Length: 46
Image (cartoon, one colour):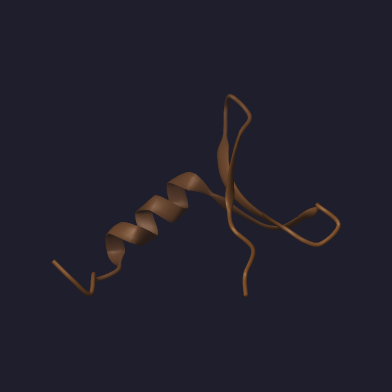
């Protein structure tokens, strides 16, 4: 199971991150790109 994403806001940039067991960043995704991808995907329900 994937770890939950948390929002990191640096003031100039926002990113969703997943942490590993040690608490270090495992995966970093820019918020703007993530939201743009959500728009491109077709939803399953209305």
